[in-house]
Amino acid sequence: MSRVLVVEDDPGIRSALIHALTDRGHAVDSAPNAMTGLQAAISGEPDVVILDLGLPDLDGVELLRMLRAVSATPVIVATARDDDEQVVRALDCGADDYMIKPFSADTLDARIRAVLRRTATNAPSSELAVGGLHLDTRGRTAELDGEALELSPREFDLLAYLMARPGRVVTRDQLLSAVWGYAAAAGTRTVDVHVAQVRAKLGDASPIRTVRGVGYSADEG
Image 1 (tube, rainbow, N blue to C red):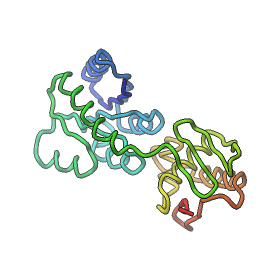
Image 2: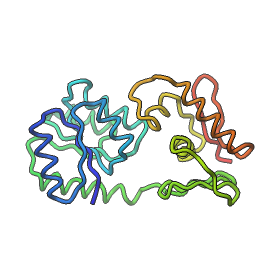
Image 3: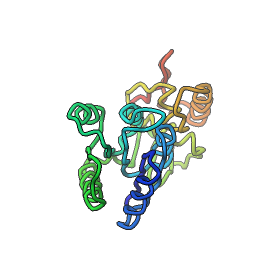
């Protein structure tokens, strides 16, 4: 069973997709607009997102860009826009597939299965390690030099997000979106506070490096 997030503003279409996908064995969540969809995609960690482009608060392609900045979750665009320019634009922004309405539920189900087969072969390891620090993102456990390490859920998610991108600079805004589910820059001080808490627990073993004026990076060690 896969977890599917449907981002669709039309209540009739949204309801039909939920019922059709549920009948085919998927667990389905939904969102009626872009901002709710972004938060659900980050916090709910779906296996695949079905994304309409004609959303009321933000164009779907812009939502796709925002999602791609913080997540590799597969995205299938499902829209009435059928011109080549829109198709190319969406695919260039990170869509994994593009479907033009109307389409059958069986076709959508087959596309979901195909996308998940492709992405499964490239799935990242659930094991993250830097020096003596080890995280298991599937089991949500942390160890430092073989000893269990107590981290709050936010501290764990913050550390895992950085360690999964070794050497890459991540902005505070990106961390807010990925770890806290904020759709826009707000309260970046909370990121700094949580980084300080993680560093205090790890001491010299902390892989987190501050990039002044930008954000943070996890050294590869």
